[in-house]
Length: 165
Image (cartoon, rainbow, N blue to C red; front, side, top):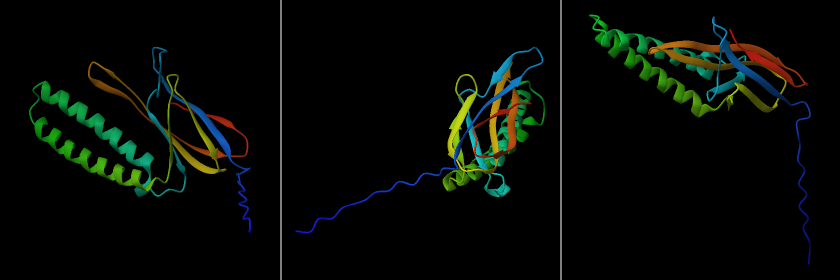
């Protein structure tokens, strides 16, 4: 009887490192708002805009700001804003479809910010990347905050990155 031996060799990327960081905005009054619960994206710096999850979420975030403004104007009775609101909803739908298509391609890494705004990506190959997240809050139904983005170069050593304004 012949015995077969299965040899399994695991290769690890000895050059990979972890990317750690924090996303926050310090308000004028000194309060700090973090990206708690929001997604953080890491993608190659060379990703074309049409395939960029960061670009897609920036567009969605900006459109959400417009929708909130238009809805407030409609609720306040300002003339002409019902049509602007309807048009903005259509644009939002297109942006959402665009983002969904990019998400299906999965050419990026994602994680979540913890309650302190901290995040971590594991086993990232050295290279040039873009980090992005959203820090947002509302004051009297008015959207505030925005998208934070930073171009980084990941080396062989763990480094902490801050996404802030």
